[in-house]
Length: 192
Image (cartoon, rainbow, N blue to C red; front, top):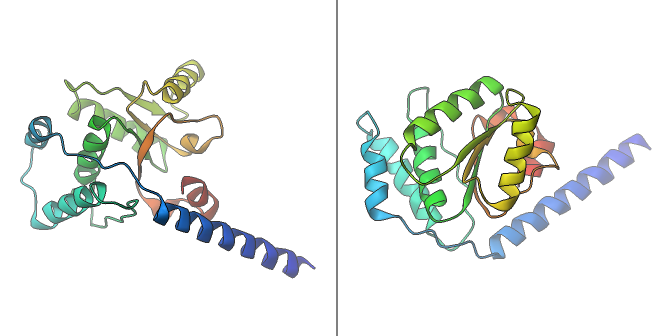
């Protein structure tokens, strides 16, 4: 009986994932246009020379964002490859197009690190960045959730707290998952 229940649950999950994949495939995502002048200004703030692989990854991600189907891209690379820069540029383009961006990470330490890096890098641009993790006070977390629902936060960086039923977005356009291998099946299902 237990085996039959598990089998039934797996079939239900598979059907749900297939239906979700079909919905994403048939849906029409917003066409995100590159904000030319400000984008080049943002890129110029990168303190290193882009590698060939990094430039290719950035170009591929931006092409996907400008495409006519939902993007589902995996960027792999060793430590120091520049994956965070790829994510930052995608986040910049999406946020400047008026879409909200969520960056989900597995640990509070990584959340704090990304929040500090994003805040420094996006300084001077008209974008509001917030953090949602257990390192944030209860009052601040509630304020961030309220602002996300109203569309007053452009980029939110957080841990599993972003997967809470209490979190609602007004116009989520891009979800960036850092170290996706550290998230479980149910969490990935919720992300989709």
